[in-house]
Every structure is written in C-alpha cells, then in structure tokens.
Length: 225
Length: 400
Image (tube, rainbow over all chains, first blue to last red):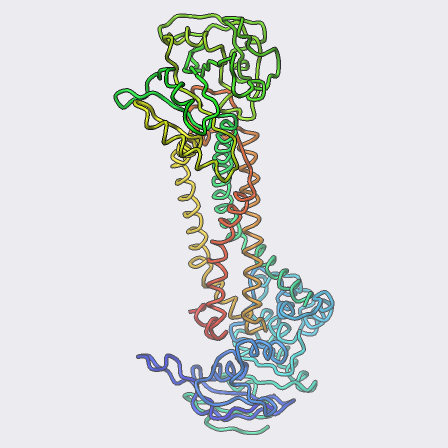
C-alpha cells in the first residue's frame, strides 16, 4: 500500500516566485489497484506522483510504502527503491534519441546486476504485446508519438516493478495506441501491479479502482470504483 | 557486480556512439592537442638527452679567458696555477672554432694527441678508418654527418675555408659516430697543431683549458667541484664553466625555443576549453536531461558518475593514443617538418641531421593526463552536479 501523509511541495521556497504545487495531500493507493489522479493542468498531479516515485523530495509530509516511511531515504537508497520497485511512464515520453525501440526498453537493466541478453526476448515480447513487434529495431525518431509512448510503457515494465507510475500517459497518443495502453494497464492490474496514473481528462477513470480529483495543489475529493 | 559494471560500461560505449558529433569534436580537438604536445615534448627531451650525452666525456670544468667582458683566448701559463689547485687531476689545452665547407659551418676541434686525458677512441668511436696520428699533419677525423654532407670518405681530401678565406686541404683518416648525433656529428677533429695553424692562434694561447678533477666519492663531488671552480675564478681574466652550467645552457636554449612550447600549452588549453564548451553548452541540456532520466529509471548518482568516468576515460585514452601515435610518426618518420625548424633553429646550418627523439613514460603519461583530465572535469563534474538534484528537477530544468 502506498500512503502519503500531509504531503507538501513548495517550489522556490522563500523566493519571489514561490509556488505551492502540492498542499497537504493525503492519498492511499492499495496494492494491486489502479489509482487515478484527475485534474486540470498545473494542479499538482505530476509533482505528487514524482514525490511518490522518489523523483522529487517533498517539502513536508511523509510517504509510506507498506507502512515503511521512505521519505527520509538517502539519495542512494532512493535510487535502489526506484530501481527495485518503480516503473515510470512520463507525460513527455522521454525516450533516448539515437537508440532503437528495443535499446530504449533495455535501458533500466543497465543499472541492474543482470545479463541484459537474457532480457532481450522478454523485451521483444513486451513490444509485441504492445503491438510494436515490427518496430522493435526502429529508431525512436521513426516512431509516432503513440508508438513512442508504448515503447515507454515497455521500458517501465522490463524490470517487473511492483509499482507503476504513469503521468498523463495518453496525452500525446493516438486512439489506437491509447486503447492498446489502456487495455494493457487493465492487464497489469490483473497481474497484481499497483498503479498510479494521472490524467487531465477523465478518460482513464473507467479503469480506476480509486480516483482522486485535484485542484490547485489540493486533493479535492476522492471516489472509489 | 560484474554484470552491473559491464552494463554501465556498455552504456558508456553506447553514449560515445550515440553522440557522434560530440564524440568527434572531443576526439579531434584533444588528439590535435595531444599530437602537438607529444611531438614537441619528444623532440625537446631528445635534445636535452643529446645534450647530456654530449657532456659524457666533457671535462668537469672549462676555463676560458676574458677580455673587456668578452670571451678571449687564454694563456697556457694558467695551466701551471690550475694544476696546483687542490682537487685538480689534469688540465688539457683545447683549440676549437668554426670552419666552412661550402655554405655549411662546421665545428673544428684540435686535440692534444700526446697527452689526452680522455681516450679519443672512447669519446669518438670510429665507424671507419683510423684515429689521428700526432706524427701526421693535415689530417682529420670527421663526424658521420660531415661525411654524409660532404660525401668525404676515408682517404679523400677535405677543403675547409678559414675565416681569412684561405682554403686548407686535409686528408680524412677516419669517420666517427657518436651517441650524441646532434652535438658531435658535425665535428671535424684535427691535431692541436693543425687547429692552431687553421685558426691562426699564436703559441702560448688556446681557446680554453679543460680541467678534470680528482675522482672522489659522489657525495663530495659537488663540494670539490665548487671549491676548485672558486679557486680558479680567483685567477685574473678567466671565467669557469661547470658541466652543470653547460647543460643548463643547453636546456635553456631549448626551453626558450620551447617558447614554442608555450604555444603548445596554449593549444592544449584551447582544446580543453572547446571540450568544456562542447560539454556544458552544446550538450549540457541534453546531458542534464539524460542524467535526470537515468536516475528516474533506477541509476544511482555513483552509477552516473561511473558511466561518465568510463566515457571520459575511453575518449581521453583514444584521443591521447591517436595524438601520441601521430606525434611519434610525425617526429620519427616524417622528421617533424615545421616543428623542427621552430625548435632547433640550426636546421639551415645543418639540414641533414635527423631529429633526436626521446619517448619517455613521463611525457606519455602527461599527454594522457592532458586528454583525460579536462574531459573528466568537463563531463564528470557537471554530471555529478546534475545527479545530486532530484531527477524530476533535472529533467524539467533541461526541458525548460
């Protein structure tokens, strides 16, 4: 279970352009469930998810994973936490240029003590499941936005993480890719993965076991199912 | 951990291949810097080493006459006084100067063949013919470079022009080689008497006096030398040169010529600046974003530093190796055109000699340091700084 307690993030604290991006967020995401954060752009969804994923240090508050407080982890332990537990899907996709789809999928393995060759087939299978079998060796520049996002989904899953954090995963995606990704998220839930997804539109709420509505950095309301 | 390191190394290699333009800029600029530095350093070291070799059989002290603050001939009557100085083993007369063969100025040295302190056969090992005979006038032994330059062989006659434009003929008795090719190879040796006649030096005067000190323990050598030098300096109208001073003079000559050396360092600094600029400005944002992304995907700060270290080492070693290999090829095979004229100066007088090159481990290591250290600073430090901020901020900052 992922839990946040009075989580707060202030950018440029004490400076002229101080921004309170997330204010006292109390969120609970159960294991094996999909938790969706909905709200307009700039309401703090990405900041909240980045803090949960240990990509961003909170200004205040705590983050508990299975009742273990991970907020005060050192930089090294945060890296271990991300490496062992979390797969990220970013709004801006963030694939590395000049690499092909398969190479991008394999990147997270580079920080693991594994032989990447053993993961080549699983990576190809992931791409196949996401409808990119024939694009595996294409450079990312040759792929459409939707195809790139599907590569990013495969990259997030190659290390078999328990937690998947997807920030606006359908923003730059065509209908066909959106359906492929949404269907796959459902399958991941069936596999017992814990998923946190943010969206500025409510097209992913159908999948959600729990939905949080965010507004101006605060959790406005939550609903189950 | 073996797999993990291999993966990080593979990723580093991948970065080198992926950023082709950056890689090319780094390798080209650092290779050029390494090439110039290595080439000039190898030549400079070669010259200094030749200088040391040329002094191998040199006397401990050289005493010259002074007149009106300038060097002049010295009276042989000084020998008596110098010989009496405590610590002096032997004193030898020497007459030397310059003579012209064609348009080339060559060094002519007269040797005391009756009482040589240093065996000439050791100092000037012959490659052909025989050494000078005190009973035979108008004969010479020539350095190999003189033989190559003039085409003279054992038995042939050599015409040398004096300062008063008189031509004198000498029979070549032998050709010698020398460990120190630059300093001795352009020498013509003759008997002291022949040299006296050639230069028109009157009896009782010589160019300089060579002083050899007693063999003592190495620890006392400098003390003894300083004592003897001080005692001789007390004599009127003389100056005393120690072996050290001669060596320093040679080093200073090339050190000063290596004002060119300063240009080398300037080139190196410019290359380092190009690399730093390339890293921080051109690929800075890209690099910052990549660091943030890698951390998000599970890389730790130390993983990222390792990747950049491996990348910098590969590029630095590659550029250094290309530079060193080019430097060696340029100096030894091509004879260091352009650089040689800058550094040696006397190429006009003596165009046929080969450039002395000495490849020392120290220079090789310094060259690698030149290519690796700027890269480490320009690559690892910014990556480390980027890696210490939250991955989300690094990615946002790079995208902004």
